[in-house]
Length: 487
Image 1 (cartoon, rainbow, N blue to C red):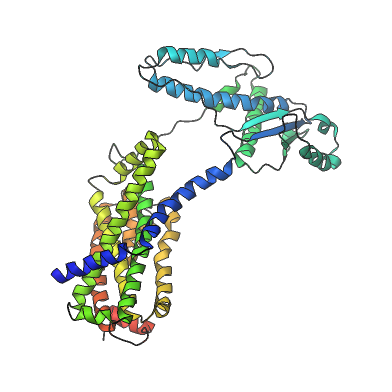
Image 2: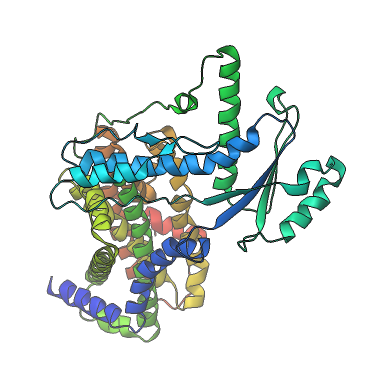
């Protein structure tokens, strides 16, 4: 036992004192930050949403231009009102009914929300200590403009006229980016055209939604002329998804997110630390340090100490990542802290935490044993590449299956993949938040324990046979014989 502890300590010190260790460990959270933040940075140049300047050429004469012109203001009012309703329901004393507080405005787009009145009611009824209501409108800035000469442009010359219109800036310096053409037969099944250089799919969906809503209203109004409430067509059925197998305080989406994160972290940590283990074994073999180790400990003790060192380094890596995540959450604000805390609580309860740790450690030992065996069979990094390449392809396969497994975490595909021994830890971590059947949990747990014990024993035999060998790595038939325990 003393030899195992000394070897594990030496492995840990050797790994964490490498010049590239801290850099490689910090690269992963930095990569996460880049993946999350870069789309936000590239999506806009400032905190102000980009203004979309559009015009409508309504050849049907059916009033679709007016509907599209009023739609941006109506959508902004709906978003603002939803925020006000949420504030009234959670941060006011009497939860006033503010949904019908409207003021008759001027023009075709009335009525509009009486925002000053609603804000005054919320200020008067807010709970002591509650923050003041701030109505946010995070939607795109949509500004309709008159179509000008485009209305009289014949269809065969419309493309050239549209290009000229896109090249002319408005009085506010914002270029026109969308022209919506409503054909004469639009109400009878004609197709509206959107001429645009705008690549924003949400903006196109907004236009399609407004036109669909207007067509729906006109069809209902034609069948029932007394119907005049457009907002009545915007209802949607509220649906709440409940998992009967989950704990009452568990959040399925958060637990699923954490399960995916832990499975990916298992792959990253395994590959990162196991590759260092492989390189260290090759270095010891090439500089004859392996002979010194064999004079002080048995092959079994050496492999056990090295695997213990890998696990210690992996846990130390997770500790650094956890501290980094804590700092990032504190910088992000209390809302982000609560979100991550709820996700961790949903995924790592007293029921699942021991299994998550068992699967994580089992995966580390399985993949570490594989890399340890590869390193003992190779005499140089060049020799190791011939075995490392196929091994990495095998280990990377589960990452390609995450989408299919999470689409049906308890379906046939997920079940079959779970019982592939080298993939069992990875897929069980993915599926645990979806509450697979108890027999699958126990069967997979026993399979992980058996596979871990077999891989440790197999890597020890391979290490003992090849650590002092100067021959080239064995062929595939030799690997299969070693895997089956044959001489």
